[in-house]
Image (cartoon, rainbow, N blue to C red; front, side, top):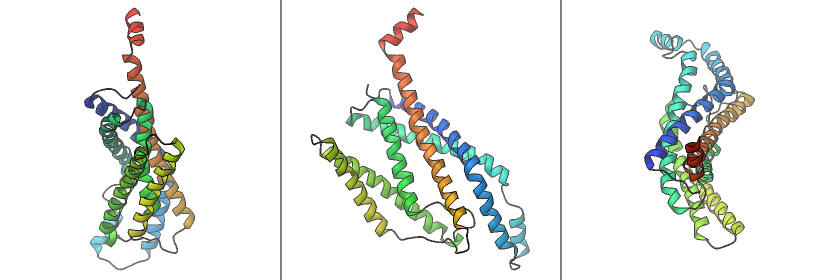
Length: 256
């Protein structure tokens, strides 16, 4: 059955699914990502411990962080819960528009949209500008790196849009041919964007490669959990709502 419900219903569904997804992602990040962050912070503190320059005020700020590590770890749950709800609301808006152009059943459409979201917002940016732990990156270039990340997210959205457009443009053709065209369009847009965008490599030679790799894998696992849980929760809520609204379900509820 196609996706049904008003925009308000979809938004409420997205907020709930996003809350669940955010808390699950934060749990994954706490158990998988935090140990690597602690190790990176230890390296950063060890590297700065031998420097004697700087004012007394600068050293006092280093010794007394604005937010403690325990506060940061707890705040991760709040931050990802809010982020998940925001992504859930965006997904609901996208589904409200997208359902007019497809006959996919509601749960499958939810899963497909979440998968496209992960590819555009996470996968494409990650393989161009992968996440780095503390102690990696020049603070002076943070604004430049932020804008580059925004640019590569736009690139991911354009690549996904190109893939969908190519697939729809070949309606009536063999499914395998349409999929090949969609993948080719996605790869072409992504490749051109990767070439045009400048590279960023601020990892020092003495930073442990194993720790860097482990942190990046943990970061990818956290975001994958967020989007997978968002799609699955949205799909489950959609299927549950559809089942409750069918005549058979209403008859069973009434007779009971």
